Amino acid sequence: MASDQVLLRADRDGVRTLTLNRPARKNAINPELWRALRDALRDAADDPDLRALVITGAGGAFCSGADIGTPDDVHPVEKLRRLSDVALALHELTIPTIAKVAGVAVGAGWNLALGCDLVVATPESTFCQIFSKRGLSIDLAGSWLLPKLVGLQQAKRLALLAETIDADEALALNLVTWVVGAGEIDDFVDELAGRLAAGPPRALAQTKALLNQGADATLPEALANEARAQIVNFAGTDAAEAYAAFAEKRPPRFTGGWPPKSTRSE
Image 1 (cartoon, rainbow, N blue to C red):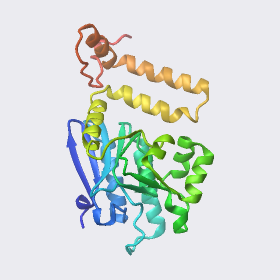
Image 2 (tube, one colour):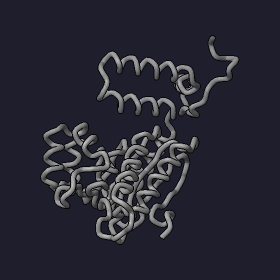
Image 3 (cartoon, rainbow, N blue to C red):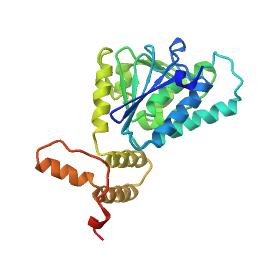
Image 4 (cartoon, one colour):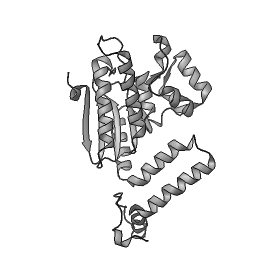
């Protein structure tokens, strides 16, 4: 099976959608899909035309985690390296990322969703840090993500007991951003991704980086980071475009561009 079959890619209006495509296995991630996902995330990072990324699953499931039921000849160390590569590539993307979760999100599949900036689920979605039930410890950055999102005690409950939670509880724990009807999720995510794609790309990238850094920064460090980012934003064309659009009572047209060198202040 070729990589373009286990992972589907579709681009529209600056938004790329990656679809895990192993529906017969509830999109469990085998070595080939780990590799394809890693490569796709790296490709997204190198594409200057992309403004947002959506990750979803085919066949009514998001992802049932790593595929441990299908034999393969990939060494465990290599599997873990690919897994780490995926987590880092997703985290380091500067564009906004959205997980569209219909159905199950289990183990590494759930942590793949948590690695996205925004998570949209349906009332039928379920979530489980299943690792301990499989005799394994948490991975795909779950040990880093969960405590930041829910605090240490709730993270331990979810990981140690491997309890399955529904979408409402995930929303209450801040592990899901929105819960929308199964018949509405496609349109909802399309509209959400479109809004992000229409935003100021550099300012959104700066904001994402600042928030990611903020949890580990001191207040003086955070203020210094904000000042550096804002200087860059003021130097670009998008801030001026926002002011002009407001004055002219029209929607802004953000490009992430720079003014001609001759017009920059020295």
